[in-house]
View: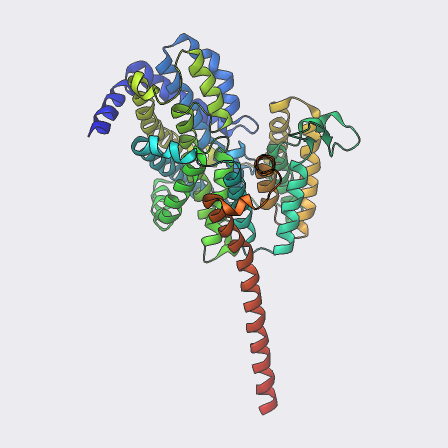
Amino acid sequence: MEVLAQLGGGFAVAFGPLNLALMVLGVTVGLLVGAMPGLGSVNGVAILLPVTFFVPPTAAVIFLAAIYYGAMYGGAISSIMLGIPGASTAVATTFDGRPMALKGLADRALVAAAVASFVGGTISVVLFTLFAPPLADFALKFGPPEEFALMMLAFATFIGLGGDDIPKTLVSIFLGLVFSAVGLDIISGDPRLIFGDIPGFYKGISFLVLAIGIYGIGEMLWTMDSSRGDVQIAQHRFTIKRLWEAIRSLRGSLKTMVLSSGLGYFVGILPAAGATPGSLMAYGMTKSMSKHPENYGKGEINGVVAPECANNAASTGSMLPMLTLGIPGSPTTAILLGGMIIWGLEPGPMLFIDQQEFVWGLIASLYAANLFTLIINLAFIPIFIWVLKMPFTILAPIIFMLCLIGGYAPTQTMHDVWMIIGFGVGGYLLRKLNYPMAPAVLAIVLGPLAEKAFRQTLIGSHGDPTIFFVRPLSGTIMALAVLLFVYPLILDMRRKRARARAAAAGNQTDDDR
């Protein structure tokens, strides 16, 4: 009851005229920022941070948190419409969102993304409200060995049970790991894989550059090649009836929503993990648990639902360590943390006691921002659909330009633009050879996290690798990862035996005749 009373007080703060206006403005700006390739929540919050110096601290944090929330929703828009991830958190949404748009189901994909984001955000805020202190304590039990084990589990979800060609999946993951190793060594600082001392490689290869190249440029080349120049524009329609049907069709995705939200929230509360690994892991988990994993990557609705639930849940989860421990759970919350310190708000356990009005006002604003973002997102869908009706001869140059701008904007160097074009051509060629590209994107995101956790663990254990298996949490997670690695091999052996028995039975029948 005490929690409900405090939450009620928080709603009174959140619905103050200034706070409410800034919340609606924040989610609208966040939607636009998230939908712009190359920007995302990190840049949006950083750019607009100085604007908040003119308002009280509570209103400022509510505004920035609303931008963060809106950007999580907005990232899915360009992923589905154009095949260009608006932000790294929306990369996994591209895998099935874009194929749905190509089939003329863009409205269903956009509605699924909006509703899934709402569900993921709501579940995570409820968890945040009820279990903030104990979850923060549990997250502290995750040291480098547990983080590395969790990364292995993520890789295993893409290999195990996926239905893809396992050797090609492994090649794709190793390619991503090689790209993630480019740059400076995280321990010694020595340059590695910089291809003849090219300056642009010193900062490494951004996963967003890889994703935009593969899913923006590569997809466009694939479309032109597969259509032989005669690109048919899918007939997109949007009516209230189709909106209602799209919402009703999501009843079959409730299990995916709950599991992905839980996973996203859990990954979000881990320090330095964030929404991008959470969305990719949720996609892999959902695909692994599906009865028809072969449908993923071809326009499966749960392939949109899972990452969108997870990235929104993770965005709320990442605020938990920021508020309770002063440890940012993602790059965006790191900027929010800096802003709080500037405004004189000291994060930590005492924040919930000394600044109750601020804390509960922020939590209540997350509930409200979630609802406002859903309404605004659904209201804008007809405009998004209108964009998709443009002829390909107009849409293709726009996509190409947005890809280049999206690659240039974060670092403002031409090096990344050339990299996007290179990855686009490479992704197109690999797709012609039936190599899955999603594992490469997963590897370049999780590779640096896994390497850091792996090396920190080995330094701490004086080179003893058994530490990954003897600690209870990391040992359990590693055992699950090994099972997921091995299971497809067992399935493959069973299939071969079944085919052999069928062939033997056929030969026996021929002999009897």
